[in-house]
Image (cartoon, rainbow, N blue to C red):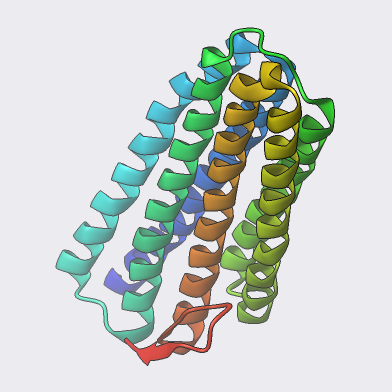
Length: 225
């Protein structure tokens, strides 16, 4: 009886984590859309919805601690619970960065735009959003191979950041009117780059779930956990 209850609780944790991930992905999409379109209403929606994401993370953490205390799980089961706790914390931070993008939208005061940089920001956001979708699927399937492949996609996020950085600085030097807007572009690209890093973290937790080892993906550092 206890075991079946435990398995049901574990399944609920996974489901809640996935739902939280979808909410975060939605927040990323809406925050960048709001930024590029100067849509302050949509930006406020992202900020308001962040309370729900934070609550989901708190619920997951509370339930995880309860399961550890009451069921005293060992090895694989414990790894599953630790993975949910750690990965949901990464998701919550990704949501915070989406809020930061939304706040940048609200701060922008009709500055001179740089369309080609905005296009790159949109492409970067699309790539990050795809990584988030893929990592959620890999998590649900416990797909270690896929997690390793997703982590490699973070290189492209970094490439986008460098491109946006270079183009923004060039425009700001050539046209002082773009300085205020260009600064916002750099900030938003920075938030997206950090979201990519958190996706890589979740990839590392999927690998840990399958192997019991904490591996720093994209480097050769591996340690027992």
